[in-house]
Image (cartoon, rainbow, N blue to C red):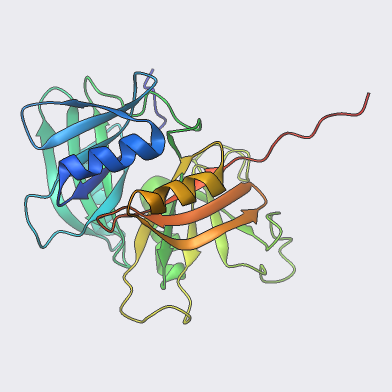
Length: 271
């Protein structure tokens, strides 16, 4: 049985101008250690478990950004579905040695994501714990086309979420335009969600492209944001509370955007 269900987020990596600077930043921020191979690529480990990778950009025109990969059992079929659903295939399936096969694509709104068909490497060895990946969401201006795309390509089932984080009742538009994705075959809702879709509003510059925002779990959101600044990064959205914890959107010292999430403390039951 595969470690990751079909269409589940299974890996993240960052494309950076300066790999060594990236190792210093994330090593300090998340406590990651790194394992390097022959190429310009470094695996990131937390408690000795794979959590992400950093790569030196091979082309200066490439964006400095974190990328998300979704698991697939048949990458050729997934690529065909992307084309049929109106997406763009950027990189056709290419083998990464014995580790697996990858491809890159963009949804109809232009947000870029990856596909991963596992070989020797399944993906994350740790997630949803401090220092590891915990969530991803696409930010787009074309929500109707994008919702239909991910439902067709990945079989995601959507749950619209209101401002208080509860599922929309269906009697009115949600107060906050956000949709959670649950895998095919599950009961849609927060308990099964693996990612989501948010809308880029007119409050943001028109030239802002669609993108995926990837989240890493931390023990203390405020402390992580402050630490990122001390390391040369920036705060794009200061810490704020959501129904699922406390979060902030940050940039590393080279401009790659990511988010951190401090899960809520479980309430103690009264004796």
